[in-house]
Amino acid sequence: MILWTFQPAEIYDQIQKDGFYRCDSGYVDPDFASAYDWLVKQMKKKIGDPPEGVEYPVWAWYIQNWKHRKPDLRSERWCYGSGGELYACIEIEIPDECVLLSDFDNWHCVLNRFLVSESEEEYDEQDAYYKSLPDSEKEKYMEENWERIFNTDPFENDWTARGKWVQAVFWELRKEQVRKVRFFRTAARK
Picture 1 (cartoon, rainbow, N blue to C red):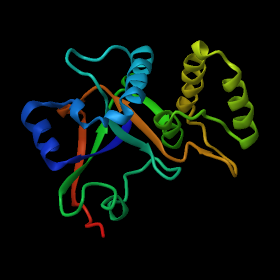
Picture 2: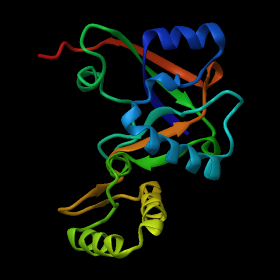
Picture 3: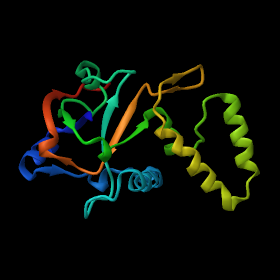
């Protein structure tokens, strides 16, 4: 599977020096730690256990704006850093069975503890059912609902667009998985 990950240039240098990169758990926002922990459980179920010492995944893009192609750095330069930092867009190839894909927009439901739905009506029904559950069953219901983020089949209506932005997670990035690298400077934000 061909993917693209954006990393500070130092991370690319680390890959060249050490032969691999693993996510530093210090990058995980404590406000979202429970969402990341849920994702890690899903990764273990779907792609297997991480290597020794790995806590959180490396992130990359599979689809951007409905297309599987190298990212346009003219727009991406606005998405990273605070301005002027050197970044690397690293094209990688990782075996499919080592990658878990998810819908980027629906991932925000997990981050914000919302239910994933395909319409306002469906959301209202789910929400009413969720509220009717005993407290002891609510978390299980929500976590099962979140598994819908792994459906990346294209779908769009006035409520949601699934499959437009598809992200990828995997346990580590190895030097031999790097196909190409493009460096760019991040744009200054006002």
